[in-house]
Length: 483
Image 1: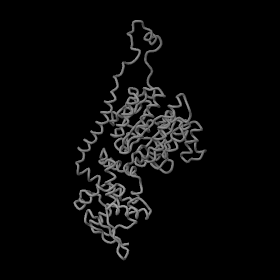
Image 2: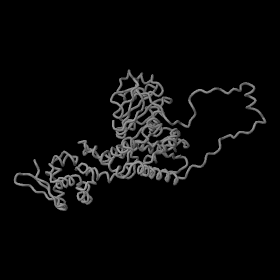
Image 3: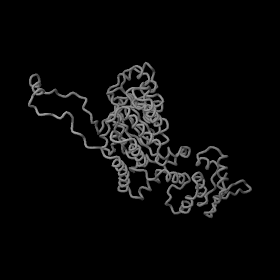
Image 4: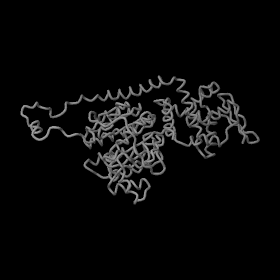
């Protein structure tokens, strides 16, 4: 595991880890009855990964606002803002990669669903350049993706269910990794639950929920009874980000807590009988306020947006304090070299590779990715071609020329330019195909012909059928191919 966190221990006391990189690609479903420890599990996951990846928490009960005290999450009290404010804040959250908690506890159910749908849809519809990796945690997901119509209007249910479906079905390509928790699988829309590849199943008692949980875990129906016997805080885990076979995990300790009351017993009042009655009905007892004093007014939406922007600026400042510019570039060079060492790198979509890049940078204590998506595409093409460190003097002319080459031709052109600059043999069609992410030789030949028609290269073939390619703008040519 490249970016793993400890979530708890198995029955032998060995640590159970979750691979955050894999989780970003495969999503997570948490299920358990009330009191099974779902919120504790989510809190543990959020706390352990807070320094690795952006986090967005949809919090219907206000349980996770305390993350702000320890980890700097920005709390958005949804009850204080209208839909237009929520759209603006969600846009800035996506742009500046701030970790936030959307607290919905001051809203009625229908308003909660509409607000969450607006926030999630805005994040989903963000421009491509803001498709940064983020964990999107939705507690009590059965409220936002109900399996059947309830007490809310059909329009509200449709909006909320659509936003949740987009998050779980199509969010991965946009960097959004859904983590949903529910009390009952039977109440959660099946098309939302089905998109998760990782599962953490806690204690549940109803037969229909036990049967669904057993199916998801690949257990036989007769084994479903074991789910009923799980202790509080104990879950059965399965999935590519955790383990390939079901394993029992006891969730570890957390550093923050909920704002709610305790769930343990406390001593009863000392006063009893007539003494307690006298205290309740005393005529001359001072008047107590019927309600607690009003809380201070929530910050204006512009203030929240300023906090999000300030959070992003502070990350840049922190990065500058902990890493000099040269050190940051050395980390970029190291990360890119590790990525292109994987022969399957070119066959993966750029969005997935960028997610991998940002996580690797955070693992090297860079709080913010030093390259945006456009710059990453360019540097990745250079790394695939062999220019991992663009600061090297021998590549100065090649790097300058690369700025004028269309993106779809950049990787093969740089391969040619590198070979020509160093006097190496011309790359073969197989080399071009592997770097371009294709297995079609015909596509490679058409690409080379297209580059020659545009005047970027000149192709020569000798009588022995060996190919050499020149780069007119650099005045150099490759040696003849060895094929």
